[in-house]
Length: 327
Image 1 (cartoon, rainbow, N blue to C red):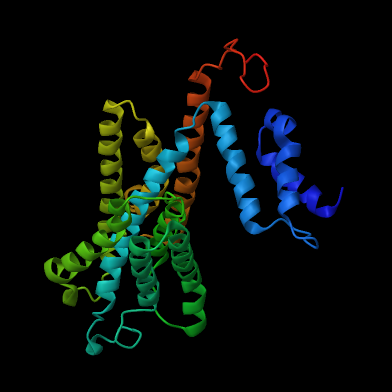
Image 2: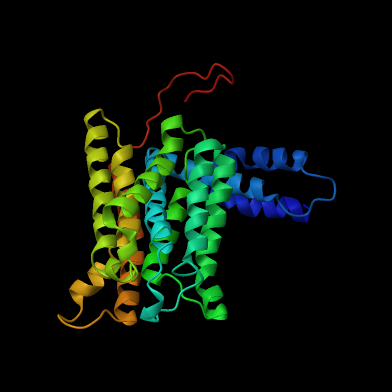
């Protein structure tokens, strides 16, 4: 056994044990046949394919095969939300406070955040016109720029959006990477349309010229409202799909609890903190950690609950037309 085969076998542990015993040698053999002569490591695409296939088989074994379609539906709602927020912040970045206020800014922009929001708006355009594979790369670039913004701003000693604005954007973007492989035209256009509507609303309805300190009011008002609207849309979608026996909406709603929770972090920290005084970083951090633990925990408990309620498939006794064995 060479190193490449050994590493493929390690990746194969993503599959259930019974599936590995039945088809493990066949799967690894196929990848080895397609590998280059001097290849020592699995290709990143092969590794992702193995892990994705293993997760799919484990969900099938647990009786929750509808989870992945639900996550893909949640990814669409997450991208629509992230694009709308980028439209709001990107528009407001074009209107820094007056110079006489003495508030630091970056040239004609409020902060370095203009780069991040431009990347998210560009990702919305790419989602609308390019295949999902290219769209995921655009989302990844926007994510990396969002993650890199705090350290870059610290090095340059330049203003940036606060973490309670950036972290929800990261979570929404991570979920958005689960965008369906072949989305319909309406799905592809949804993030771009939401961004355009957000830009128009911010510029004409809110009045971006008066938003010199536009990040501050989001602490306890705007972002929690967006999180609440995200859950309301998810709930309505879940109820509508459930009427037709489709459980994707329910899984989407449970998946959206985490990004909606991060959007509500400032409001939650303010409600649990002292009655008077500004929200401290410690309060925001503790609330964010609680949300990061509670959201995935609810999803995991839901999976365990559904898997226990799903009856184990019983042998049908029918004969396989290929091998002649009884199922």
